[in-house]
Structures are given as structure tokens and as C-alpha cells.
Length: 170
Image (cartoon, rainbow, N blue to C red; front, side):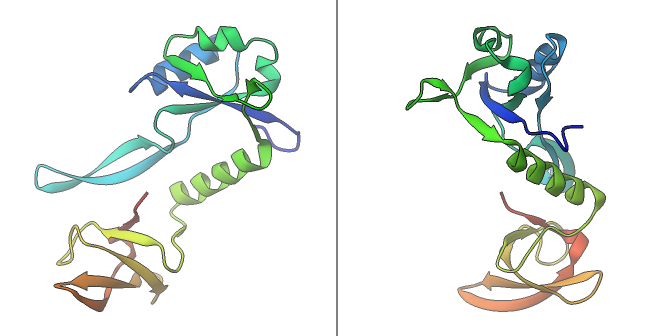
């Protein structure tokens, strides 16, 4: 979609819980946007449920080539609170395209089921006897199991859990 060309991205702060409305309204005005969404497991009513969360809650990325000179239009868009400004230049703060591409690549890997967890990442166990405990990811044991370091009663223990039962803590 945006690969192979040099783009810059504007960061806009959205009004509380209005990321999707801001995205729809910006798209309707002809802007290209990027609103990264991630599936998370959350403990709700004594069970783990999968919910969709915004990776950067309260923020949306807008392609600068579409917005050149239209910053006031973005600020007045329903759902947008303000465009983030670089206080040295007093122009919108811009992100380089390679940062957005890196986020896109990581999200693609995450949604395809590839492991994006690496050594020393903080993870949370979402089922089993270690349910709701947080620990440090040590290594993959096999295709289906991983080794974690968990603090249980002020003592660190290495435990082995199913890969499908852990998620990164953001």
C-alpha cells in the first residue's frame, strides 16, 4: 500500500475513545490513515476473552502527502483533538515511513501467529495454573512451549507454558 515510496506521517491526537470515528472521517475527506489494531486477551467475568485494542490508543497516523497545507482541516475533523506540533519548527511532527513500515511488519507477523516475543520480554500467562501471572520470557522450548521466569512467593522459578497461553505486556 505505502511501500516503495518515501512518505512522512503526521501524528494526530484523537478525542477519548474516538479513534475509529476520526479514522472514518479522515478517510471520507481523502486522507490516507494508519490506525494499528492488535488483538489482546483480557480477563473479564472469570474468563479470558479476546478484544481489539488500538496499539497507540488516542493517536492516529495521517499520510503527510495527502495533508500538505491542510493541517487546519485535520484539526477540525470530528474525532481529532489536535495535530502534534514540533515546537522547534512549529510545524506538524512528522514520522518517517520506515517507522510505520516496521509497525506494519510487526503487526502482520503478530496477526499471522508468528512469535514476536523475544528474550527478556515481559509476558502475561492467560490460562493454566499460572493464569494471570506475569513473567520474563526466557526461550522457546519447542514449537508449542516456552520457558518463563516467574516470581512466585518472592522466589523466582522457571516454568514451561504453552506458547498460545502467553501474550506480551504492553
